[in-house]
Length: 295
Length: 276
Image 1 (cartoon, chains in turn orange, yellow):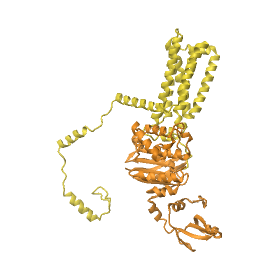
Image 2 (image 1 turned 60 degrees about the horizontal axis):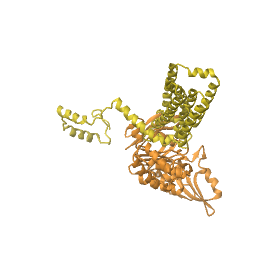
Image 3 (image 1 turned 60 degrees about the vertical axis):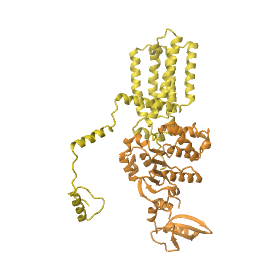
Image 4 (image 1 turned 180 degrees about the vertical axis):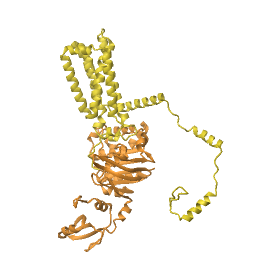
């Protein structure tokens, strides 16, 4: 099973939201990472066939998804970034309705609805209308509907937005459990979510595919470029003038800083233990010489 | 490595000599072409697995039945307020016509498009509540969903108008039933088509209320000019038929635009200002 984006591009007016995006997805969990406006949602909408590409095609097992229509939608589970709901429905009614749209018969629908309400912890909502749900509850319901048809391709746009830490852990575990032989593509800018569950990471910037690979491979390329040091507060400004500074943590009157440098700094700095967040900052922290993330 | 003689590119890099050696070894084997009767029998066996082309009638039957079941599914989405509002409106309308003794032709005309126009709010509820993006990715297409909802509200509107026309023809025995039907069918089709087009560009509730306001204003103006009322009631059959036909064509294209398979129809509803 393979989902391929072939030189995919989408232009709005003169601006390319996604440009020349070329990659293949085989079973596994892929995390699309990029800052706001990097083109993740536009790419996802083309992958789920609700947005026509300006250039390129999306192929599923070699066939253009624009021609597969129902056949493609039948194996697709999708959670949009901004999902609306029929607010006068209960969670169960909503899931039963989406089941019908997905072509499940009543028996299957009841079974899947019960199972998924249990999994996303909405079993107790009973007759409560969706209009009265919290943001986190709605997001969990959104995740549940995407899984109703046991999709082979699961595409989730910002699935952990609005979830509390406990719910996020449940979500990560759920994705890891169900991934199996599915293609799971999720977009996020919460790097830790990607770190835990993604088998491959795709970095996007300004609509372009910046880097794709297994987390370990991507981090390997960063070895010897991230350093950690303990400095006095007075030295921070001077350090910022010389290096790109990542995390800063205050400890016992000192500052623990992580900084980017191609060569070992001249002061007492040691190589840092690398994480995806370092990679994210490495790619995205600078905008016109200013720090985008506030560092 | 690419060889013009061999005509294909090897996936792995082999030394030229080793490659030619393998090629020579393979060339020693000859593959016989199968005899004609074997080719034919294979074709005969495979023939039974070739899907039968369906004729137009069975395709139509299949599509109609799918639409019917989709309409049943979608009818649960339509609120009880809609069903009851329209029913009460028509019952009260009938009672008022009989009690106040207004012109039952113009009264039927006035009431006829209201259920369909109000129904558009129900038809487009998914779009107005941000469900389009999700519904567009489900097995049953977005077009099918919109069509089935239109079918539900359309049938309900026709049913209500039909019942009202029958009741009026019973209450007024001198009424020519076919004329009464034409009298409600004409504004019903014309106003419904216009409201469908309004719904393409406006939020369901705004489209419906705008058209209803225009319709009520038009009826009040018409009622205020007795000559105009007389003229409208006494138009020829052909004129009514022409209006109904034109409205039906407009309605058809309205549906095409509203439930466009073309992405442009849907992209309007996607929120381009997303974060990703």
